[in-house]
Image 1: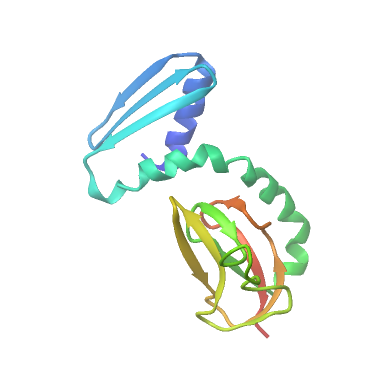
Image 2: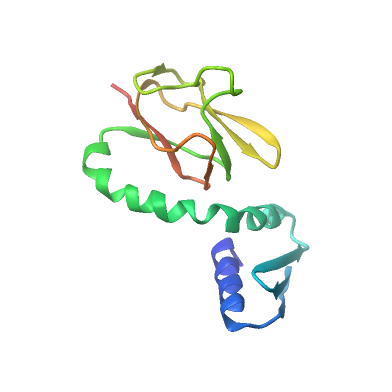
Length: 162
């Protein structure tokens, strides 16, 4: 069972009005409890490769409102952006453009970046992860506002590699 299926199950349970649903399969056990406005989800699993699923599920409802806004903005720029390389978020978390409030931004529009240069920080579960550029070039556009939640694989910067 993947994350999309779990998310759709949570939405279905929330709409149905059920107060608790338990689902047990071969390698996963899911309990969804709803009460009032918030839904509580508990996932217990025996398979080692899926140990990150509870962490992603805990953050997914918080970050979901940002996804439709990003999806709506993307189609308008597709014809211009085809020649640029996109730097995407490798994790879910909060996007920061600078290392601390009193320091300058890592990357601005027009900044030349090389492979391995830090372009931003993404905070996930109180850990600050430096995101490095995987391409050399000039930053053309910053696609995310400072201190905004970001999804996995969400575009952060457009880089002109020429």
